[in-house]
Amino acid sequence: MLSNRHRARLRGFGRKLFNTKKHCKRFDGDCLSLADVPEPMHATIYCNGDITTIERGLYLGVMIKVLRNDITEPNIIVAVGDARYVLDRRVANKIRVRIGD
Image (cartoon, rainbow, N blue to C red):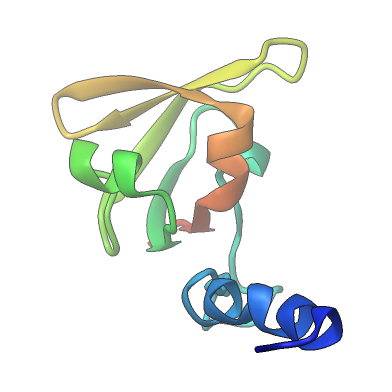
């Protein structure tokens, strides 16, 4: 039987193994957040940890165009090929891109 002290130590053990955050492999100066890209710019995705946007087509190496990025609005609009997507700023902050590739 485990004491309460040992139970508390083991409670978070599995969470630490599987819930690790993935960081961008590039230096911070090379890539920036999708929410920070100005409006008429093209960018290439280098890091994306959000599975729902990967399923939509925003995966590693894809060229995107930012159609609307107004700071006062909660969403941004991006184009991937022929598709147009409305992304929340919280999701856009997770996606790292590089401008001009």
